[in-house]
Structure formats: C-alpha cells, structure tokens
Length: 282
Ligand SMILES: C[S@@+](CC[C@H](N)C(=O)[O-])C[C@H]1O[C@@H](n2cnc3c(N)ncnc32)[C@H](O)[C@@H]1O
Image (cartoon, rainbow, N blue to C red):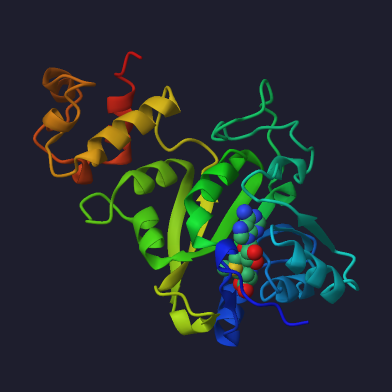
C-alpha cells in the first residue's frame, strides 16, 4: 500500500534519480564497509547502498515504514532494520567492539578509561536525508560517538549546511560553525532543489560531508566552557567581544591572549574561542 508522507516525521522523500546517483557516487561506499542510515523512509538511498555490498543498519522512527522496509528488502541479508528514534539510539552499540573503545579523545562522551582506538575499517559510515526539525540535535548526538564514526553525509537545509561550513568573517559564521568545526572537517558537496523531493520542501537543501577529527584541532580544557563562551559571544553578535563577554572575561584578559577586544564574534576563529574558553574559572 502507498505510504502518505507524514509531516510530523519530517517526511520529504527523495525521488530525483540524478540526485540519488550523485549522492551514491560522492560517498564512495565499498563492499564490506559498515554503514548506518538514519531515516531510510521508503528506501531511496537504502537500495543503492545495499547494492554496493555494504553492511547496513537503518534506524527508522515511523513504524509503518519499518513494516514497508522489512517487506521490500527481505532478500537482503546485509540489512538490519531498527525501529527506533535516532535521537535516543545508541550508535556505539553498532560499532565493532561496541562501547569498549575510544580513540580520538573527541567523543563528547568517550567511554571512560579506553584509549586504544578503533580501526578505521571498523568504524561506522553514516548517511541520512534528515528530518530538518531534528537535524542539529541528531548531529550532536552522533558526535557523542565520534570515536566510532569514520564520516557522515547528510542532506540538510542548505541554510544549515552553510552555517556548519562557514568561516570566520562570513555572515553565516556562528555557534553551529564553531562547535561543528571543533569536532569535524566540514564540506558542502552540492545543493539539492526542492523539486527533488515528494512533497517538495519550502527551502533549498544541500549535502554536507562531516569527517570527525582524529585529534582535537585546538586545545580545549572543558567543552562546556567553549560552548558557554561561543553561545555568549554570538547571542549578541553585533557587540564587540569586550561587551558581549564582559560577564565572563575582562577586557585585559582578552588583550593578554593577543585577541583584539573590539572585534565581534563573527571574526573570532575556533582557536581564539578555545583560548578564551580556557580562561574561564567555572
Ligand atoms: C526526509 S525523510 C527521508 C526519507 C528517505 N531517506 C529519502 O531520502 O527519501 C526523513 C526520514 O526520517 C524518519 N525520521 C523522522 N524522525 C526520525 C527519528 N527521530 N529517528 C529515526 N528516523 C526518523 C522519517 O520517518 C523519514 O523516513
């Protein structure tokens, strides 16, 4: 039976074969790799991925779609379908060694005491045409398990991809840019127009590639402090640092770090935010 797209689950199904082909070409899936797809829907990306010979776990919230997927892909032994909310799903349980290992030190909740690392070819490769309303929390949830993730490819609102990839000095540069770039190398691959989906969303979409860093790109003593400084600085983005951060850091302290306190948050690099955050007491 045909499935009627459900707005509450952010269902905009991809039907443009050229876009599907471009996605599959750019991700370079190889037989034997372990992939995870979030929100497989009716299987627009699932089928070509399975045909690449990968091992695939998919996580789908809509139970009707889970039934449809089980029927449609019953001949594929390389597919595991999880009827679950991706926001609560324990992705580390899928990786080789489960939650026993940690490597980069970048996992937001790296398993305690484990430093051994996990081999590159055992890491998960993640893909998803994400429901736009949960895309940001879902990316941060996945980054909790960055140590077991090789890379992630997501279809997101183009506006969000632009913000993730923005460099200092750009109007789009903000909290999401700084925090995502701390965890990952980010790259916009290509744009996807609304008519590629059914139903067509109101906005342009784009594909982003996120590759978790093996080592932190800058030294941050405490991620919650980095988050606090960045949030505070961008909550008043028109103000200079000496004004926006005055409750947290004095002007003299900013100067002592070699940072111009008359600059605005949008010109401050990740490395400078890291140095500012390392000054915070509590
Ligand atoms: C934008 S659609 C993409 C569907 C399909 N991948 C495609 O490209 O046509 C988003 C999918 O994510 C599913 N979804 C929504 N919220 C979810 C959640 N919290 N966890 C897992 N899947 C979810 C929806 O049911 C839907 O299948």
